[in-house]
Length: 256
Image (cartoon, rainbow, N blue to C red):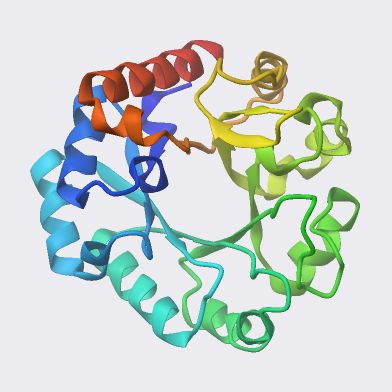
């Protein structure tokens, strides 16, 4: 896979200043930034983020909004997208019983999509052990057609959110049929027995190599985003963080 399609999610470096995240992404060799807008206060300063993009010469192809999405946050995301020339806005699914955000998606998102036809909107699949607040109880692949047609959204797939090993799931089996809806995939490992998600590749027990082979066979050419949950000890060691991120890029670029 071309490294320009391998993104670093700012979720990965929780607690870092945005300037430092951009610098790391550029130094390590990521092709772009997946900007989790609600994670850092400085992401709300659009002119500042634009300066970082120019300073480090790194693209911001994706802006990610929170599961608490409302009109104010979406307006900020759209403004930021215009300034950064970003064409993808990703929506984290509302948490269980978050009626306000669900209502926003069902009533306001269609109007926003109509007003911004140049933006691709996607929804991230929630963990399968939680309840999705959209009309269907879970965001499962046997209902994908209903979701993409009802909300006119593409999909951002987090492979660690699928119960068990992604390779053995219905998601994997139906991947060829639904691939046209998928514009981004979160790539990370997980411990299936301990239910630890978003581990660095190789630190869990997922058979992600088989996923890479299938995606290669299917000529997957959209984005992949590296989202890890690192320990405080790891985050405090800059050398270790760089090693972890370089390994992610090398593994993905040589496998896809």
